Length: 284
Image (cartoon, rainbow, N blue to C red):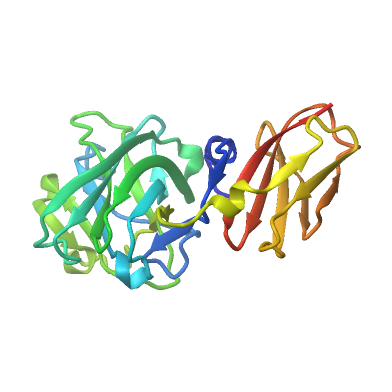
């Protein structure tokens, strides 16, 4: 189960209508975080524990992933190997002039921040980030952990797994003499292939079919009926309470029994081949 999912889940579910989400990743396994990678720092016991600037990057050619249209980014994900509480992480999304980041020119198109917590070690972190990737682009995702100076207890180390990779990971750290993106293999750390994903959807997907889905009655007492346009025959439904807990799930059922649920606000998420739509439901 991914950490930080309650807040992200509620953000997604309260959206009136979204297209089917696509995960862009260079990792064969884009979910698991089983290892903690290296970063530039003065490691104890021989060092002082000071943490220097580190930026971890991966690049993605969108057409390789079958994306040939403008792509709307809704979030980015990255593995946290290990981190101290309170470490500020900045995630940046760029367009790049080439997939080889050692020579690419980067242009910033989106940025967001996250404050790390040690309890999230060896998990996948999701951070909301809104950006549009133009059709035909190469993009770079950067996870940046700032220089802690002479302070200790301000570390962040990237997360990865050993399932396999389809691209190169890069490290930048002026404190260790890496002033430009450097492949991890070039510094003797070939295993450090970071889990870093871009999440979103193509912007040309037609959402009219999804908007035609209706739910009644609302408020509901015993049952909810879902009305679909004729073009939709295969779907799944998930009902979440206000905390993000899944309380009901079914496949291809147009009538849901909610009689045993407590009164309150729920989010009904309906997933189809045309995408996903969420409805706010009141149980009376």
